[in-house]
Image 1 (tube, rainbow, N blue to C red):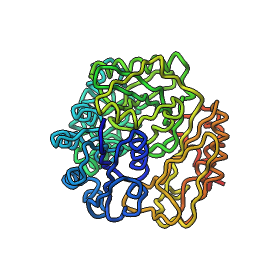
Image 2 (image 1 turned 60 degrees about the vertical axis):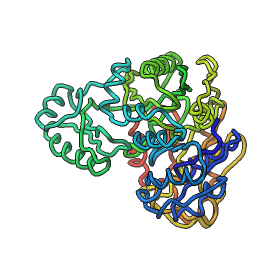
Image 3 (image 1 turned 120 degrees about the vertical axis):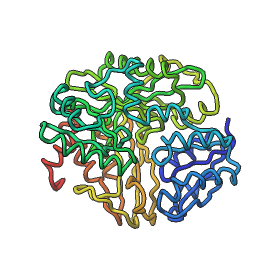
Length: 451
C-alpha cells in the first residue's frame, strides 16, 4: 500500500481523495495555485505546496511543478482525480518514469481511449456494438457528404480528441454539412489542438447510460452497475441517477456483461467508465470510455456500498480485486445533483463570495463540496461547488428526499442552479423516468423563468 499520495487536483475531488486516503491510513499532499490557498483540500491535507498562479496552465496543468512537488514532499504516488491531467497519457508515463505510483489505468489504456476514433476501433474489435458511422477521420467535405448520405440524416459530427460537447454538431440536412464541419473542426482544434472529425448516425431520442468498471492488475474485472446521465445541457451532465429507470434486469445484465468482456479483452486495469447511447428500441451503442474516476461516482458508491476511491488506491498499489460479479448488489436508488455557481436560467457563471452557507443533512443525504461560508468561488475553474447525493429504498422515495434536501440547501452571495434542480425534480417527464438527453431543453422551453 502507498504511504503518501500527492493529489494533482483541487476542489471537492481533492477533498474526496483525502478522505479515502485517510481511512486507509495514507498521508496526503495537496498542491494548489495561489488563488486556492484557502481551499478545503489545502486545509485538510497533511502537507500542501503552492505550484503556481491561478491559470490552470501555470499550476494544475504544470507537469514539472507537480512532479517537483511530489519529490519535495516525499510522495510515493499521484492521484489525478478527474479533469486537468487525469486522462493525459504522457503525464501518467512521466509519473511512472519518476518512480511514483500512478493511481489510474496504464498509460496505454489512457492513450487508446483518449482518441475517440482509436477507442471506437478498439471497442469494435472487443465486441461492443457501434453506431453506423465513418471508419476513421473524415478528411474532406466531399467524403463527409458521401458518408452522411450513406448513414442517413440526421448525423452528428464529433471531434476525434473531444469531450464535453466541444467540437460536436448535429446536422439534419445535406446543405448544412459543410459549414457544420468547418465550425466543429475549428472548435475542436482550439479546444484540443486537434481538428480531426468523424461522423455517426444521430439518434433522435437518446439516453446516456454508463457502466462502472473496476479491474485489478491480475485479470479480475467486475462492473458496479450503471448510471443514467441523460439530464444534460449542451452535453454537460447536470444530474445522474443509479440504477437507470430505462433498464430492466435483462438489459442491465447484458450491458454489464459485454462491458466486462470488452475490458477483459484489452486487459484494462483500475477504474473506468464505458459510456453507451441507448436508443428508442433499447439497443445500445458504445460512445466513449473515461479512464478515470467520474464526477458522478457517488451514486454508484451509495447503491453498492463500496468506496470507489479506496478501490482505485488499493488496486493501483497491486492488491487483488477480491470481489466477484455476484457479490456486487445494487440496493435502493441514488440521485446526484451538481450544484453549480451559475445563473439558474441563463447558466452564466456566477463567481464570488459565499456570504451564507448551510448544506442539507439527515438520513440518506450526502454532500461532496468545496464550499463554506466566506469561501470565494473563483472564476478560473469549473463552476461546480458541490454534489448533492441522496439515497432511498426506491426511485420515488429518492426523488422526494432530493426535493427535501434542495429545499434545505442555502447558498447566498452567489447565484446557483438550485432553483433549476427544484423545478427538474417536479417535472413530470423526469418523475416518470421517461426522458432523454433533450429533457433540459424541453423543461426550459416550458418554464422560461423556472416559476
